[in-house]
Length: 113
Image (cartoon, helix red, strand yellow):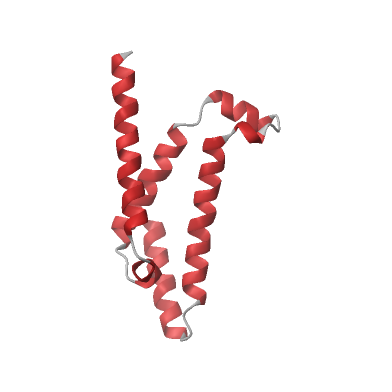
């Protein structure tokens, strides 16, 4: 029991670290001046920790249409939507085609990390 509790505390610590990294970035950095590898690590860590918190019961509830009880699944969906919105908004805000191309390349590098 103590070992499981320590694992949970360690997961919570990792989640908080990833959240802190993602939330501390000001919008200007998120728009076009981010390190792809650091961002990929933070996003992957955060998503991994979210996925690892989904229980069999939550998956069953989701499959049965009882989605109100699926907090971790909703959290993952919301986070994925936020990342997608960030990517599209950041690219669309660029007026010059050259800057859009550079950002698209940057996001491709992020996805490949």
